[in-house]
Length: 304
Image 1 (cartoon, one colour):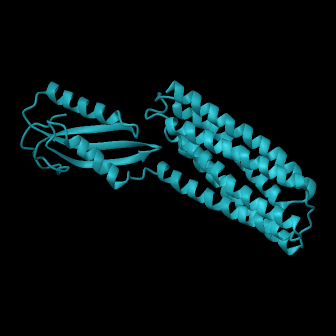
Image 2 (cartoon, one colour; image 1 turned 180 degrees about the vertical axis):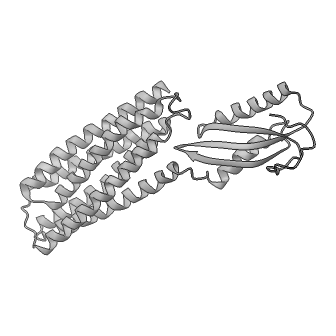
């Protein structure tokens, strides 16, 4: 966990630093030569910088264990930060789309310079490095915050290519391509923001795990020699990890100690999975079935 936290912080700082460099280079050149495509791409990076800072500050809380105020840990912090990233991108994309439309209507005026092409080349390699590094780190860390930043960096490559089209249009005497490219950039930004938000909303509202995952976990429970059935089974997201709840049917003649050992073995087996955060198990005598009515007497003592 300590190694994961260290790698998480390194990748988060890499996103912060590379975004700052991209903003300075693209923003300065875009303002100097009147290129909306470069200004839009730099503005996109301002949102990326804010998102990177939020992931850096909030995301590291997810590495803290449970405490008295957070008995189930801090697993929802990361999708909350990623949702913030997605919402920021949607708002920024809408603003950039509006600006592009206004510029097209008012006859764009921009001056081509080879420095614009150089700035975009720098921005492209800047984001390519950040995407590669963040993706590599997140293979081990498994952070939804870093996943959002990696997706953002990948999307930056496409927005930078769109900006290159705009600058190329300026170079050959079609300056209208610059705000058009800015509009394309804004649509890509909006799309990315919506996708990131949708994924992380599911993490925050206790969405059920996909059916194949539920079946896999259920089969793992049933593979235990002393478990003869499973009911009242649920597996749902609590942040980026799963909470699992179920009733396991066991023979009614187990002693209390034996029942406790069965429950411990089941929990230890499931909690060892990378995608599981907590497990809640209730042992029932075999054949009792689903939750019984309050006035219905069980046929044998209930084992807990």
